[in-house]
Length: 385
Image 1: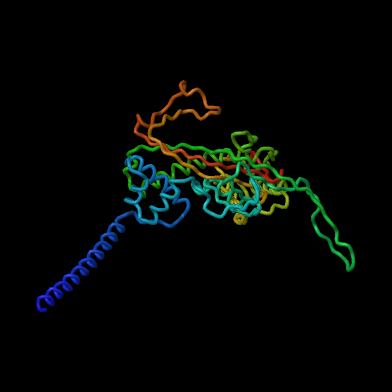
Image 2: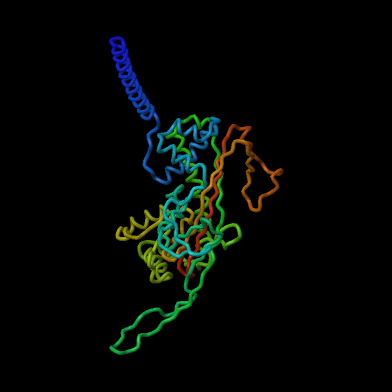
């Protein structure tokens, strides 16, 4: 009995010591995890643009490090950020807000301003396209569809009501509706980096990647957006296609400025969401000369000429976008010629990413834009103030 009692006492004491050791081990592991987490780059706000850049930068750095994206981000980012990066990097990047609801292939039932945030707008938020996309009267999504239908009126008609006397007939109005088809156009851009840049800290490399991607995307999109080229199978029509330029008033000064602005407003009557497009130096000159115009909705448009100002009703602008897909390569050969159609690659200068120790990032996105009605954009050229 005594020996059994002692054995049991020793057993209970050993059990208590074991539980204490387990508890201490768990606490130590938690402290160690906390220290590791504190030493990792801290997660930033869940800004969609930042998340895209993080995913691209992490994918580039993981490729250079010869590690899978999963292993790399788990080792270098906080858990929540790592999970978000893995999710973005392993599938086409979707629009981050609720897309327009659809009831049939290509038909959008709910048409609302800024219903879909285009991936291009996330990558280059300062681009003219991005500024207009946030103001557009209709935003559609190509996700799952090969085209988008854009309902509009084919004639002005008369849909207004009228005053009605007691027991009098209520007028019946009619108008004609039609639908234009918006086909997706593919925007592509390739950006290359030296592999040495991958040794930068995550923060610094993301800044470099953001600047390069935003600049290249802005130049590609805005140049097409604000030219006067007709739509082709390759690209959408420039917004200025079909717009008859207004010659700027001569004489300079405030009088010429007022005449030009009035001519633009008259060319697009009854604008619901008026937007002015001009270069930054023109905007500064405008507001310096006439500070009372500070309330105008002015969008910076570097792709316009220095002597141009455009004016449109953004309520009649429709944009449609699809997934953003990015691919990474360190073995591709880049042909230094971007003409269309692609020329004979054997006769062109080229760069080998592998030979020069570079890594390339290719981005593809479906997008297009279209004015819902003609005559809703105007442009003044040869301004003299």
